[in-house]
Image (cartoon, rainbow, N blue to C red; front, side, top):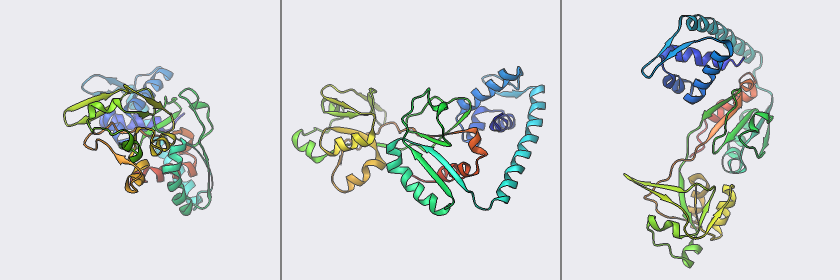
Length: 293
């Protein structure tokens, strides 16, 4: 049984709130709610009574949580014992991440991580996966830029989101002078990562931008960046991908007074990774790593 379910039960019982438990554990509220419902359904018990105003622990739920806390205590003691027996973590961590994430973020993190933990080996893959195949992959840690459907045996934690910027090359502007008006953005050649329209916000105003002329679509942000650098069109890309080229003058930011929804990023790992010392160290270190600098 996943040890984390006991942590979820305990935190919800203490705070009488799924929202508060979500903040304390840094796990999405929907994940906590789903796992607890699955637990109750599996064993045919009711741990909590829920309504719109509060969450109340049932009499049986109180007894279950009391016993689960003993398991948590023994689990923590076991981890402390293991860590004490093993001064330096040794082994291999299997990581899956999108290629853009590897190039712009993970390569820097792993370089620093390996210096601190020379006995941990990293196997990094850019395996292409879909929502239904994630649970079948062999990994200790998986990074997602767009979110995936999480199997109940997987733990999903939200990472700090990052901003996107609208950028274009000077060569494109020299050929097709964009007038700088947000409503006219759809008249330009847009380099898009999917079929969703762009949403621009400024104070109380919001615009939905759909391509009215030419559109180039790619599911690779790295490819979109190269297209943009070569003057193919205007792209919306994470700031960390383009700031270097903006500083060098190879790209120009357009509509800087308008903002776009932040890019979603998550770290996903099987519950067994918590007991895997090397994977646990990797996850903890990355959660403390400021990749947006």
